[in-house]
Image (cartoon, rainbow, N blue to C red; front, side, top):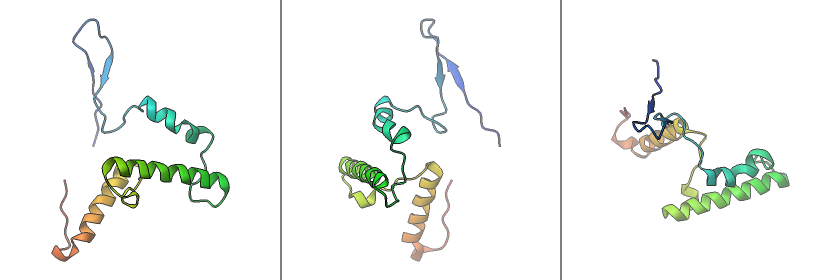
Length: 111
């Protein structure tokens, strides 16, 4: 299956820039997010599951981010799960739903 990416020209002559219309595939990084994440892209890129101090520093930052998101959403931090991308998140949600509702049958239909 071929996926098409569409770029559209704005109609006004003053605005001559492309408009990206495939945000399901990739999204530009918000400047505030980039600024907050910069230390973890360059200097503090350790494994948060490791036992050494640099890894613990990153784990503490990850736990703070999880707690902040939980507060914003009115959830508990242990309800916030970070995934590596959309496919992993979709699979987690579908499998979680299927397991929670297993007594209703063994089939889940999604589209």
